[in-house]
Length: 190
DNA sequence: AAAAGGCTCAACCGCAAGGTA
DNA sequence: ATACCTTGCGGTTGAGCCTTT
Image (cartoon, rainbow, N blue to C red; front, side, top):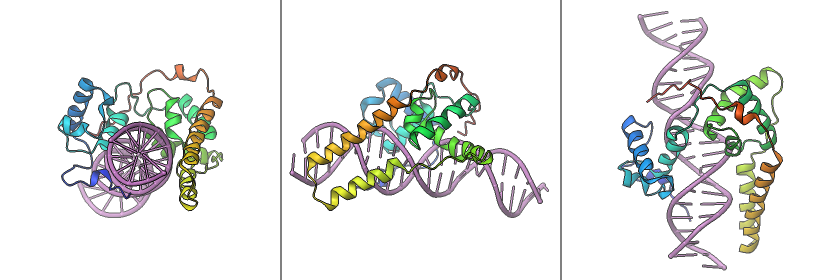
């Protein structure tokens, strides 16, 4: 296969977003919704970005209802508990913390919580990166032995099911409501 | 006042999953 | 059955801000 990275196309802009780009993206999504396909969105919206970049910008920064910064102690606590259950599956963790994005939580974990826990002598066991390592392993297997597609798809569904199971198991109750208020630490670099 | 080093976080990269022709 | 495409995820990077000297 050997797919090229999507941003390698000439003429596509990289790096920090300008307020004008933010505006174009927000406006387009307001008019057409998110589900129209990220790949084609930049062109339609008049942006010189790749779809991936647009999606990231929207999901992590522009999407309405996002809280930025100002993590409360309850949220810290919740993140720590979820991490101990789920490991570094930030999207799952984010799904349980309203208004927070996976990127936000990941950053917060790496820059604040990890230090905090280390200082307390509670450094969490680093989970084997479920995401990449297990995926890679399945792929290696698949390549090594010419597995049937049926088996491959079984692996896929198995993994999906496991995710579901973990989600089921981590019934972190009640806390969500306590997290409703919006933080105001927004540094708004742009 | 300014240089150096540390810290934060937005954005990028590579890869796997899932879809479809 | 498979080749290729898009989407979504986790890990990592680096620009720019902040703090210390």
